[in-house]
Image (cartoon, rainbow over all chains, first blue to last red; front, side):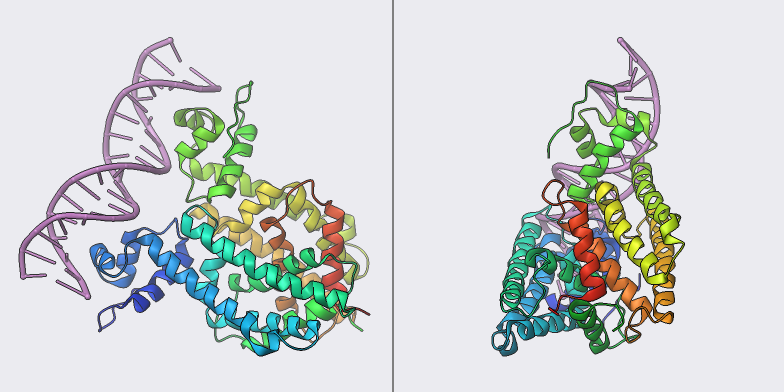
Length: 194
Length: 194
DNA sequence: GTCTATATGTTGATAGAC
DNA sequence: GTCTATCAACATATAGAC
């Protein structure tokens, strides 16, 4: 685990960046405040100067990811046009946000529900999924998507595919567009040759 | 968390079943031996009579999942016929095994790599993925699958979709066939109406 | 804003009786 | 096979100096 020793003093944001990296490497429960202090290059008690404790670091990190995801649903292209186009916009933009906020979204997707903060994060994730499931249902009703796959099930599998990207994507090797294209191709038209 | 108090004494297998349930509820790192002893209804030291420690419980559980998955690749239908049919067989059977061994596979898919046992599990998972990626590549070469999505990327997204099932599936609500059909439909033919 | 020192609880694991 | 009792190590968090 590489150490960070910035010249300038830490702010909550810069400390959060280091923290999230370590949380993703070792898992939230597997990370001790000692681990964080070593990675940040400051003492444990200095961390407590910036935040109230370990759980607040988690809350700030997953909150950032959730805000970015919900922002997608407010975009014009997600609220106007044929349902299937709105859905494709949300799918592509979710991939983009996932990649631009990779460490924060990665942490969000690994949250399990042990603490109050984790349960709050799970609840907001469910809200997001429900909003997308409604969009998919509308596209089925409009005859734009096949009706032999239940919308709720399809939404889950679709986001399973998207969310799994955090498990292997590393910046620099491939652009966000390439990944978004691949997801959209498979999700809407499938792998089979025409 | 429901408690288990079996009449008969524990064996490694029955203890493992309880353990895996708790690991999946609280996460491996988030589970203490005290948690396990409470869930099993026996004392901590009684657990140490059956296994050497917490990490051995993890090794036994993920080993069971890995053996089941690798078994699929040895099945006749995975080794004969057109590549695309072999791939579809592996996809459907992976869904089935995932559901029949749900708690064990769930635990396997959440392993991160902190300990030697976890790294061993990650390595075997990579082996499995590579074997399937080769199958997918063969199907592309044979002209059975579209060639504008890189095989390695397609494999990752495909397994992202399949593996995500452990996050929401609960026995009793839907049969394994229904889920396997939905996965195969989306993966090979896509969501769009024809 | 950072430090050293320490309080206080929890952890994985062991010893030895029944 | 199970128990009670216990340990050494490590956890989160705090106190107070600079």
